[in-house]
Length: 318
Image 1 (cartoon, rainbow, N blue to C red):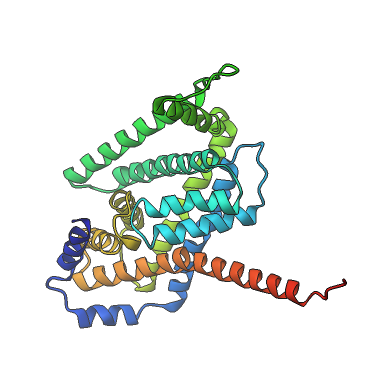
Image 2 (image 1 turned 180 degrees about the vertical axis):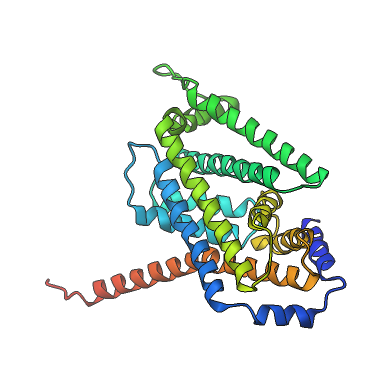
C-alpha cells in the first residue's frame, strides 16, 4: 500500500512533463556545484557519528572509528530498506562494532531521534517565519511539533525518574516485570538529558547536520543556475523533514522526489526544472549516505582477509 502511494506520487510528478527537456536540464548541471553538494551531504555522516559518540554514556569508551562504522551501516540501511529495518541495523551495528549493550545502543538511537526532532522543529520554525505557507502545511507543522513535544516529554521524564532497584534475591518473572526492568536499565543511559552542557552540544550537532543538508540542497540549486528565493532551500528541507519522517520506501524513492517536485512547483519553477532539481538533489544525497557504508564494509572485509592471509603465512615454529 505504501509502495503504491510512493509510486503514485512519483507518477503524478511525471504528468505533463517534457522528459527530454528535463533530461537536458540535468545534463547542463554544473559538475562543480554537484560535487560541492555531495561534499556537504558527506559531512552529515561525520557530524552524525560525532553526535552518537557524544550520546554514549560517559563510563563507556569506544574508538570514534567504530562509531563511524556503525553509523555508516545505519545510514546505508536507512536509505536502502524501509522502516524500521535501517534503525534495527543501526542498533545491531552499535552492539557489534562499538561493542556496547543493547540498552546503550537503544538509548543512543532514541537520543539521536530526539535531537534530530528538535533540529527539525527549528527548521520548520524558520519555514513558518520566512515562507508564506498554505494552511494545510502549517497544520502539518503544528502536528509534527506536538508529536516531537510528546516524545521529548516522555524521554525527559524517564531520564529524570529514579530507576527501580530490585532487592537482593528479588526476580522479575512476569513479562511486565521484565519490560519494566529493561526500561529502567535503558533510561539510566539517558544521562545526556540530565546534563545541560552535553545536551546543548548534542543539539548543536543535530542543527549542524541540518545545515549541511540544507547547504547540499542549495548547491544543487546553484548547479542549474536557477533564480530561486533565499528561503527555497529551507522550505525544501522542511518539507522533506516532514515527508520522510518514516522511510516507508527504500531510500525514500518516490516520496523524496514527489515532495521536492511539489515544493519547487510552489516556488514557481516549470515542471521540467522542478523534476530535474528533485532527481539531482536526491542523487547527491544518496551517493555519500549509501556509498559510505559499502566502502566501510569493503574496507573491513579487505582488512579481515589480509589478517587471515598473514596468519596463514606465519611459519609453524613447532
